[in-house]
Length: 115
Image (spheres, rainbow, N blue to C red):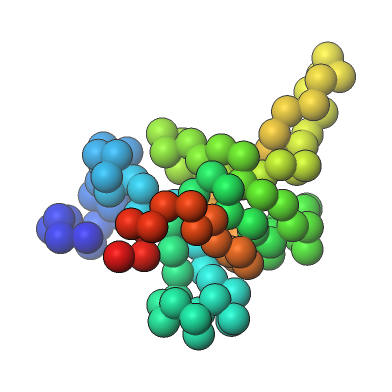
């Protein structure tokens, strides 16, 4: 990111809260699997709808699924099959932090993604 900000925690938080969408897209990046890392020549990639991910931390650790939705406002990722029951019994997708995910298969439908 080319935007200069301070090192004080309050300024870091303020930057995250006020970041524009094109910067927030990069904030939802996750590590790549070792195979993808070799193939693409990079360590991480922003998560997109359609990517297959493995959950590395939390109560859903070890589960895999396809990204159903990415919420840039909350900086959270929603994975198909990872749900939580609400008090009224309905199932809703559970929000996950992208830092706790590993991309194991990339959606290659957008040719400009790797340009």
